[in-house]
Image (cartoon, rainbow, N blue to C red; front, side):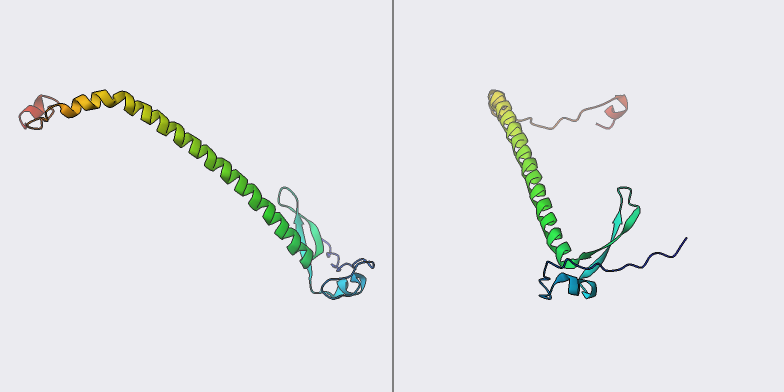
Length: 131
């Protein structure tokens, strides 16, 4: 392997002013401490190179990306909540119909006398002696 090439901070454009230093970017970018070295990776996660970016730009773009992800997550959470509410309402409606259908039988059972003594179920001949 050879020696890696020296990493040089870029010169900024001469027609733009740095909001931090209030000077042309071509004068201050190379010496500015806000330049951040970024490592780039490809889709497989392998090293693809380095570049320098202004930390002020990275912060702004990161904030916008985070806001976009929050909006997407909020939308998917709302969709899931709506699906759960629909499912719950359908189950509750089905259960109410079932209870309405069983109401006459439940009323008859409520008027029936209770058993005087609990009965134990005898499963086989061996348990008959223990009853």
